[in-house]
Image (cartoon, rainbow, N blue to C red; front, side):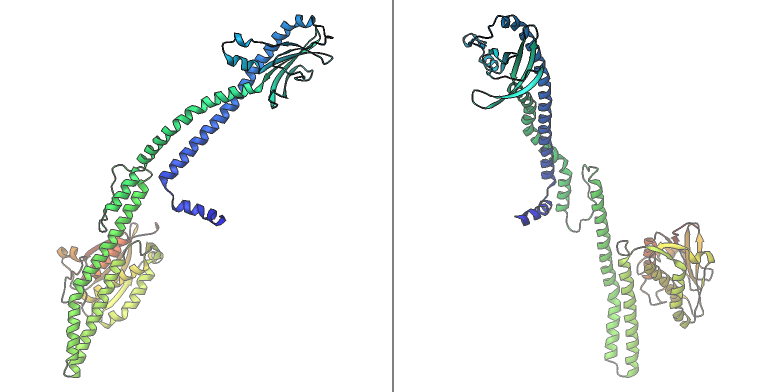
Length: 480
C-alpha cells in the first residue's frame, strides 16, 4: 500500500490531462468557495440573529416585568400551591400549530429572594434558569425527552415587589433560523453547480481547441512535409510552442536538404573519379612491365587523393550548421599564421611564394567564430590560389579592418577570372579553368558557406598581382 501511494504522484503526472486537471481544479475551487460562503454566512447569520433575539428577549423581559408586578404582589408566597403556572395559548384556538411549537421554546420564571418559585410559564422547568444576577446568561437543562437543551436567559430584579424575573429562550430557535438562512444562501450555489459543470466542459473544450487543431495538423502531415504550421486562431500562450515547432521543422528541413544535397553531390561527382580509379587499377593489373604498372599506380594514387579531398569537402559542407558547430571568441591572426606555416612547404615545393601582412592592432583583435571552419576557409583560399598560380608565382594573405569588420584577403598572380564570371565562382562544381588544378569545384562553394555561417560577406576582385583577389569580411566581436 505504501509503495502504491509513493508511486501515485508519478502515475498522476504520467497520465495527466489538461482538460481533467482544469475540470477537477475549477470544480474543487467552486465547491470550496460555496462551502466557505455557507460557513461565513452561517456565522454572520448566527451573530446577527443573536443580537436581534437578545434585544427582543430584553424588551420582552421589561414588558413582562411591568405586567407581572401587580400580580406578584397579590400572591401568597407562603402558599403550598405555588408556583402559579400560565400555560399560554389554547391549542383549540390556534390556527397555526407552529406557534404552539415556538411557545414551548420560550419560558419565564418569577422567584423571590428566598429562592422560592412563585410564577412560571407552562414550558418552564421548576429549577432556576439562572443565578440571581441581572443581564444575559446561558444554561443547559434537560427537556421532556431527557436531552440537554441550551437556553438564553435574561434576568431582571424588581425592587418594588422584591422578586426576580428570568425570561428564557431556547437557542434551538436561533440555530434553526441561522441554518435556514444559510441553507437559502447555499441552495442557489448547489443548484447552479451542474450548469457550471456543463459550462466549464464547453469553455475548456473551446479553450483547448487550438491544441486539438495543432495535434490534428501534425497527425495529418506526411514525414516529408515540414512547412510551418498555421492555425486559424493561435492563443498567445500557444504562440511560443508553435514558433518552436516551426523552428524545429525549419531546422529539420535544412538538415534533410543538406543530407539530400550531400547524397546528390556525392553521387554526381564520385561517378567519374571512381570510373577513372577503376581504369587505373585495371591498367596496373594488366601492365606488361613495371614502368606501366608504376605509372598506373601513381595515377591511381592521384585519383584516390582527389576523391578523399572531395569527400572531405562534401562532409564539411553538410556539417555547417549552428546546431552542430558552436561559435566562440577567437583571434584570427594566429590562426592564419598556423595555416600558412602548415601549407608553406607544399607551396614552396611548387616554386611559389606566400606572404602574410597584418597591422599590429589586428594581431589581438577577436571575432566570434569557429576555429575549425575558419581554418578550412583559409586553407581552401590559399590552396585555390596555389593551384591556379604558375611556378614562381606569388600568393599574398592580408588582414585589414574596415568599419567594424575584419577583412581577410587572399590574392594570387594566376590567370584571374573575368568579371562577368566571378558570380559563378561559388557555384558547386564550377571551375573557370578546368585544365588547371585538380579540384572538383567545391572549394569556393565551401568558403562561401563558411562566410555565410559567420554572418560575413564574400567578394571577388581583380588582384594587383594579376590574378584573383578573394575578400572575406567578418564582423568583429568588440568595437575597437
